[in-house]
Image 1 (cartoon, rainbow, N blue to C red):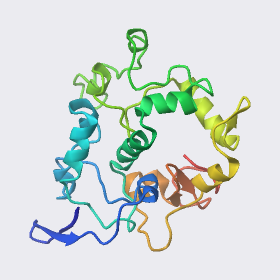
Image 2 (image 1 turned 90 degrees about the vertical axis):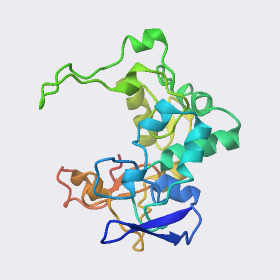
Image 3 (image 1 turned 60 degrees about the horizontal axis):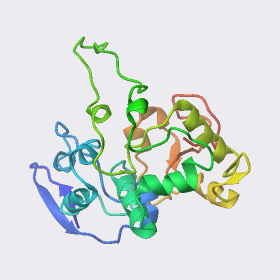
Image 4 (image 1 turned 135 degrees about the vertical axis):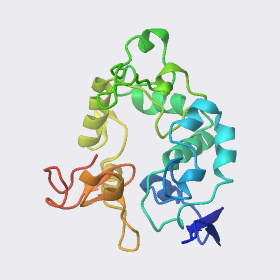
Amino acid sequence: MKVAVPQHDGSLKFQTQSSAIYIHDLYRHTSGLTYGAPDSSDQVARLYPGFADPPRRGDKQTFIEAITKLPLAHQPGTEFEYGFSADVLGAVIEQVSEQRLGGYLTRNLWKPIKMQDATFHLSEWQRERLARSIFGGPLTGKPQDIELLESQTKFDCGGACAFATVGDYVRFGQMLLNGGELDRQRILGPRTVRHMISNHLGPGIKNKVANVEAHRAGLGFGLGVAVRLAGGLSAVPGNPGEFT
């Protein structure tokens, strides 16, 4: 893949990728992949699909083939930026495990800690219970809908496709707080959890966490989670060591 560098005249200059994209980069969002934003001033973001588009409009192979034809937003391992890293990571899990991601997670996470409703593909009974947006947008008054809720996804994407209840999510969070165990079911080793919730954005990596979500100023990023580094800086109160 090439790395796109925006120029002052609005064009893009392409550089050779200087490093491979490692699994580590996918976990900490330093892969160089980004999300699409058609109205963005960022020329690279305009080339990418929106985060909810691939799972709704194509299968996994179509997504992978499309993403590999796009330029990276930056050199791998140099900048934190949210993008399709988690979706690619899910595809890697499928390739290694030789299972669909939903089947792998059901067997190794959701079922052992009794996340009863966690799934990528809703049953009709579950669909009737979906939380939905209010009809009229509070700012515009126009009708609202979330298209992803109205149709089944084409593949089990790791970035934004799974459903669960608040209760399921609380059990997942409690498992992590317990160091990888819940109700005597060990999911992760405690050293693995400590490694996850450590900051993995070293001094050579541009930390853009607060650029994405302003209230996360002062936070770093671990393996799939943001990690609080200081008591101040963030717009919301908290303590060093928090992860989210």
